[in-house]
Length: 527
Image (cartoon, rainbow, N blue to C red):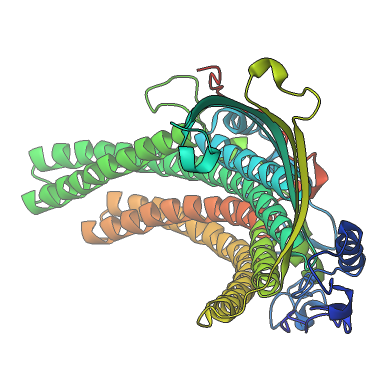
């Protein structure tokens, strides 16, 4: 993506022959000054680069995020999360993408979290702050500054200044209105407001990014909870089978049919399985705590739903944004673009500061020695003035500041490119993960089925004395590992599906903007 720093407009700077417009002597009428001002305003321009949104990467024109094309759909397998998923390139993403998992509990939890999340409240407050900063500067830069002044003072003038022996003591009352306005001839004010508007847009996309991050974290954490719950259940079922088998072995040992070493080996197996339960229970509890915090609740609060893998449906059709559209749909890319826009505007401000500044001012008021005479005949005064200030020598300060602004733009541009590259990597990783997850689950289903069949066969053979207990123990370990692996493979398909929706931007453009969200708390401004 090429840099968007174009040269200064041809009209930047003073026009040729402008010196002839200035008065030849101090006695020239104010109409001549006004003519100069009007002439400059009409020919004014905003110096510095005019920002243009960067184009999408050149290689993003086709429908592929990966070096090699993806299959039209993933592999299919039996059981939970085993459906084949179809990649629908060019299909739009729904705003509430999480509803594609067909879980009412998940949908209700997310909707509640969006209302209670402190992260959302913080992002929305930052947006309101940026908007009010823009409002404040707009009023300051676009309109004249008008101020009123009332004063009263008592003075003693010396005999030298008044010609009165012993001097004079008198009162002086003043009432006046002052108006001043700096003409935006070279666009310093416009570039300043442009930068502040970019800051507002940056915060707006930060709100969208927070929204997307929160919803994705809620979905993936709910999936993690469901996975841990299923792993815990599978481990408990294996433990129950091991304990049942231990009881049989202990009876056989009591009858002298098997050695004590067999009993000790089985007890060790039961103890190892038992030892794995606390870690799973801890992880499940911590995941539940994290889910509560994402939902804007204390971990101790009740009412949080419990999630099972069977309660979620895997979306079969996966909308995949075209690569050429991704840069307009990822909120982090859009936010980074606004930082680039803001840096561009700051170059304009730094450039305009090198040119003359023209200020118009006027005073109107009354001055009298008695308060009752204020605004009476003969006490009124007024003045109209125009001033031009041109930097002549500042030790290279203004030039250095402009070079610094250009360097800041280069930094923002590099960061923008990095954000774009990371976004495309996220999508490519998610697509490949989904294809791999489907193949892994298909293989894991077969592994679990074969391991279960082998365990049943080994149990019958051990009961008949055809195999050693160590062979049976090895079959039990294989089956236990396959059960856990199957659960993890199922959860991976759900989690990576959610990661794909997050990587593609989450469909925020298909719902009303969140910019007008009201604050969750109010501040008494009367104090």
